[in-house]
Image (cartoon, rainbow, N blue to C red; front, side, top):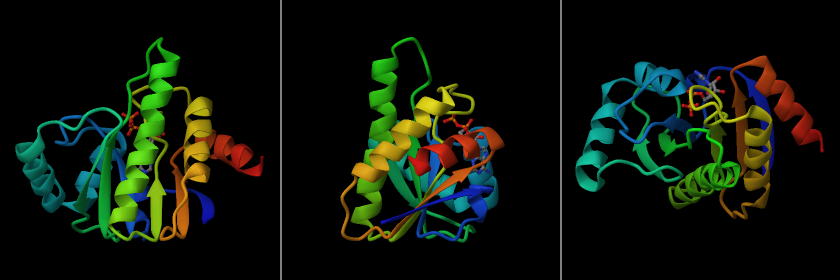
Length: 169
Ligand code: ADP
């Protein structure tokens, strides 16, 4: 499985799936969530509402999938990252679950290429370095026969630098 790093807006990425750092309401928010809903259009929100009506809110660390509306991707995988707090161990486990569950959902949809933002490192204030370490570890540990490429999409230079260093190791 190939791992790539780019600095870009994830809504522009032509992957089979892009991952959204959603909130548990699944009804959209700021940051990457807002960008995905704005660029993807109403279809994504409609599907999120359907999911909510079926299963209720999405718990932290879990993931759900919708189609991608007007985006170049096929699917959007919405995962809810942890809001950073003093319980580093719990937060780290929940963030790892975001990657694991997103990858498993991607696999079950025969996704070959998937793009991840740096989940929880915006409004949810997860320390970027630790978040990057968890992301890279979970991607490298994921054994897949279907997935061919994972793209880390960094939106800011700090994250780009962190991922560049982590991927060299
Ligand atoms: P969270 O609530 O999980 O912290 P945010 O959207 O606030 O989610 O931030 C998560 C990460 O996504 C941050 O590193 C932020 O810089 C990045 N980000 C924001 N907008 C975009 C975008 N359009 N494409 C890719 N990454 C983005």
